[in-house]
Length: 116
Image (cartoon, rainbow, N blue to C red; front, side, top):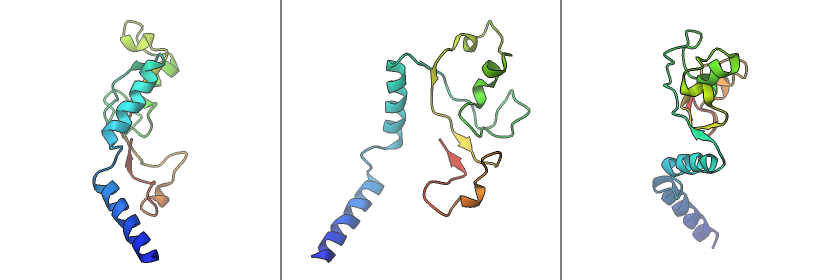
């Protein structure tokens, strides 16, 4: 009986791995739609290699693109200046920093060098 249960569990894991009920596109769109319904403006994510920020080699956090807002340096004529609440998903590259956990990459299923 235990062997049958193990086989069933193995089949379920394989099925989910190849045909997940929540593929990434569904997770992403559900996340964004939730926040849009709650008053957030969709704001396109920035590229992984920032074009306008010489202080960053890679996007390492989802908040990088909002830096001009936080620093008060955003041009008031830009649409970004009117943002109060924003939603998106940002692709990031783990490259070190204050919360550096690069030593954990590859040791488990949730530490990656590229994440969203």
